[in-house]
Length: 280
Image (cartoon, rainbow, N blue to C red; front, side, top):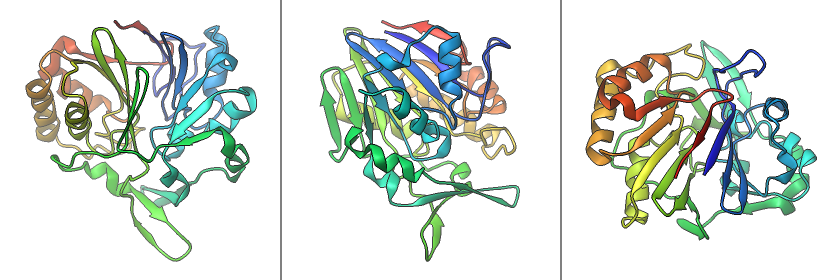
């Protein structure tokens, strides 16, 4: 399996630009997959620089409805005429509202997306397996959620409430060696993510976990997870998955990344735009 980072908060090259968000290009078996689109069309520009042809993508996975995951989707749908988009229907039930530094930022899906409704595959089952692709929509609740979630609300015409992230899902890919988990933001807690996958797929080893861990504000405006909490998460990951490798950066934050690395050591890796990896 080949994975290339198209959007992230940091980059390996001045030629590859960054933004708040995540987008990964994945090649595995007969699939070319886009996991997340970031918040603009930047993933397309970076893909062109990296000589990746996004018109050949056959599968798109949107892990949640926040703008840093779905914002670029409209640009992809105009570019690519064939890919199916896997996501939860709950993404379209609310407007998302982010509250940062006393400023309210609307995070809403573009109504133009509804023109492409025939391209969407809404995931309703707790666990859906399509060959080697696995989509899980029901999360364990063994671990408490991060305080960073308090910055994100659901908004209707009549009310505003704390986002419950019913629009979030887990994506995994099976290979002969085991599982690789992709989690866009891990709003439900990265510990709940891995324990959920273990519950649904107990016979498979989890070799890799890739994505954001939701331990800080994406732009490091806030550090809402204490050193003690980050250490606990690292130790618990070691306990649950002692041989797993982790690839993160986006919405984990430098502070928490450094704390996690004290526990996970060489098993923890940072991803940046242009970062390429081959996983068995």
